[in-house]
Image (tube, rainbow, N blue to C red; front, top):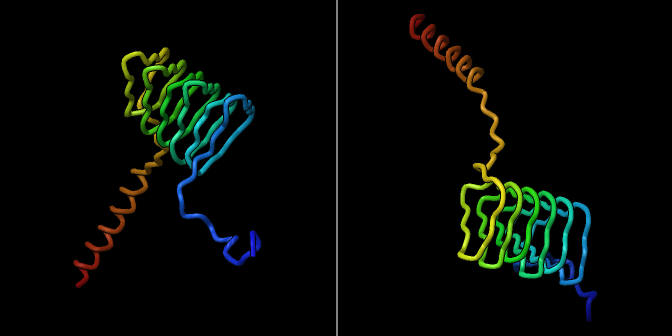
Amino acid sequence: MGIFNKQGGTPSQHATTTVIAKGCNITGELQLACDIQVDGIIEGKLRLEKTLIVSNSGRLKGEIFADKIIVNGLIEGTCYANAIEILDKGKVSGTIYCDDLSIERGGCFLGSTHPAEQEQVIELPKEKKAAKNTNKKADAKAVNE
C-alpha cells in the first residue's frame, strides 16, 4: 500500500544523524535530539543532546552545547560539552567548558578552558533547618513517651 500504510507513523528506533552538507550555510539557532555532522557552515547557537562531528570542510561560529564534540574542521566561539576531541586537522578558537578535552598531534586550540558548568541548585540552609525541626519533633516524642 505504499507510503500510507498503518505503520508509516511509528517512530523509528534507529539512531539518526543529521548532516549539514558541504556548500550548505545555516544561520540561526538549531536544537537537535540526535547526532549531527557538519560538512558545511553554521553560524549561531547549536544545542544538541548527543554528538557533534565537525568534518574537515565543516565550519561553526557561535555557541555550542553538546554531549560530545569531535572537531576535524574549524570552530570559533564557546563550547559546552562533557567531552571534546580535537583531531589532527581540527582547530578550535574560543572558550571551552569541559572536563574531558583531548587534542591529537596536529590539532590546534587557541583560547581558554574551564571546568564544565553544571547547573546545580543547592539549598543547604533550608535542608539543615528542616532536619533540625524533624529532630526536635522526634526528641519531643521520645520525651513525651
